[in-house]
Amino acid sequence: MEGLKILVVDDESRMRKLIRDFLVKSNYEVLEAEDGVAALDVFFAQKDIALVVLDVMMPRMDGWQVCKEIRAYSKVPIIMLTAKGDERDELLGFQLGVDEYITKPFSPKILVARIEAILRRTNPQSREEKLACGGIQIDRAAHQVLIDGQPIELSFKEFELLTYFVENKGIALSREKILNSVWNYDYFGDARTIDTHVKKLRSKMGAKGDMIKTIWGMGYKLEAE
Image 1 (cartoon, one colour):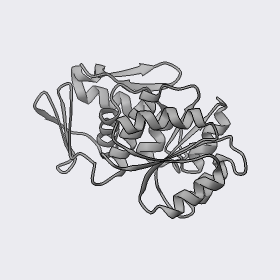
Image 2 (spheres, rainbow, N blue to C red):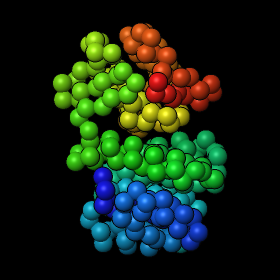
Image 3 (cartoon, one colour):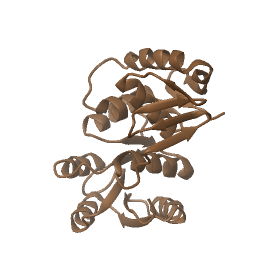
Image 4 (spheres, rainbow, N blue to C red):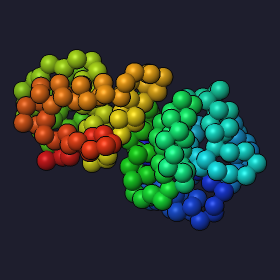
């Protein structure tokens, strides 16, 4: 994924520099914009932006409007940054097709990890066909999972769910993020469907099912052994 272009949009120059420095260290090419209008100018001038990091509260045009404008033409992954912790804002973000929603202050390392996970999922060139973690082996092409070398039978959604956990190992994932990523953001079912699928997945994984940790009041995290 080296060399992919990421557009960072924030009216605070210090925040843009912080994010840029961490992304450059990970060999990404970083483009910047200080407000929503400038962001759209940069986005439509560049045809190969791989991901957008987008602040919500900005002058001239806020992040929500920028997101709407981009979504009218592109499915490029978007991570929204906000100082608010309002659940309504997060739900609005997912309705608009936002891929991630991160509340300030945040760890730049976690932001980079989220970016890399999203790009692995959405960038065909970077998508790894085979994944491995703590005795779990996933072969996307064959749609096969091995646990300590032994195949297990998973439904389509169980396979997608386990793949998402392995791609995001060590990262706490809310039920809403899991729904957004595995079931797609336009799924309007009950988030408890996640709990049902996780329970079945853990059962089929045997002892390895303990790797999927419950984060009470939030969601789940896969911890590598």
